[in-house]
Amino acid sequence: MAAWKNETEMFELMREKLYTPVVGDILDQMGYPHQFLPAKIRPLKPEMKLAGKACTILECDVFEAQKKPFGLLTEALDQLQENEVYIATGAHNSALWGELLTATARTRGAVGAVLDGYTRDTPQVLAQNFPVFAIERWAQDSSIRTNVIDFRCTIEIGQVTIHDGDLVFGDMDGVLIIPKDVADECIEKALEKAAGEKKVRKAIEGGMSATEAFRVFGIL
Image 1 (spheres, rainbow, N blue to C red):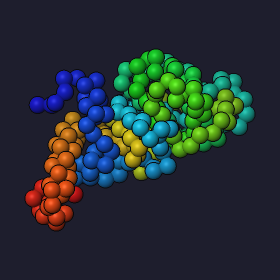
Image 2: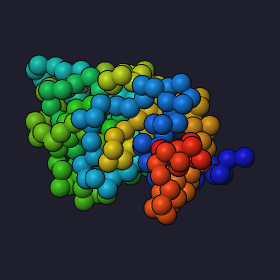
Image 3: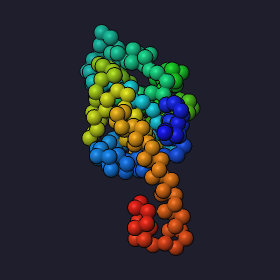
């Protein structure tokens, strides 16, 4: 039986008890060895942590003012739901995130944003206490440079194929994607491994060798 009653409790438990290395280890064991996004995607602040469901966004670069500025950006923002993470890729000629997008997403109950690209308005974003992960900060505006062309579609970032509704988990060590079909099993096993790692550390600090600890616990 799961240790949570609903998805909100599950995401709270992930943020409280788990960290990306242990979840990544479990995904490796389950046969999913390519679930980490590129290492260059990092939180705006090291202490930021996010766990939620992917709302996938596909963007593209454009090279002049469009008939519909930003493409489907406002529509994508306005349909965000509670516990979702806005995760976008496909455009690298401008910032994909900023102050007003943060305010919209936060007000709608979203729990974070992951950008395979740039973010801006950094002081105003940080003031909203909303986890944002991005490649870098860059103030160049998207209105004449970037269009959202689809959302809730399959996207790829680095080595990872991401489906709408997959789980997104991120902390200072990176961002990974948990396929939705195996999410419950993965999280339960990760919670067990996290508890086991605490026991191993205690044993090593008590004098047990790393070799013996691995033999006894099977964790290192």
